[in-house]
Length: 232
Image (cartoon, rainbow, N blue to C red):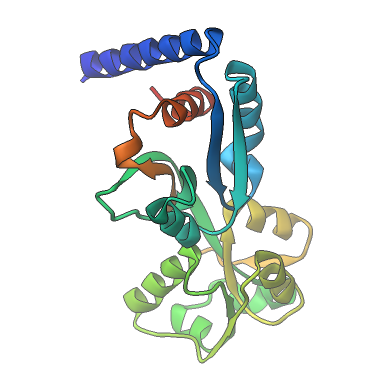
């Protein structure tokens, strides 16, 4: 396995040297359409864009922000070249590069701290919930939790915008699910309370059409992404 990892790393470096040679010859020109989700810092997007622009000055990145379901659909219809997604990608035509697991927290209004702490799942189901839409990957995590625990909320409110969802929870409307870093930050500021019983996870991946694996533009971005994320 160690030899295999070494070989893969060597091949990556060889590919990068070839790309750099194309850059020096002025042969690598064009634009890469990149789908993004969540916050730029979570994706290490500032570092990625800075390094990519420095290493491949003949290429530009067109960033299009959205949600994971939209990124997956646009990779299929060709309106995106690559993108970040949360959750599973069960499509043989899409190449997936796993990046990390994201811990999620169930949170509620800070004023509900006494109700939330140590509450059972059935007690949670009696409380109102503010949830992302069905097209959101975090909603998939919630739906799985509902099924696993055999109960659904009695009061269910959908909010399509993440900012609106968080504001509704902070203002006492109901429970929701947030990334751990957001939940912890909001807790320190006294805006939400965290349920300290369950910590679901969701994967973060980088994806692109499998048929474009050898495309120089995709190769250039993937090569830079691996450097930024320290992936062999």
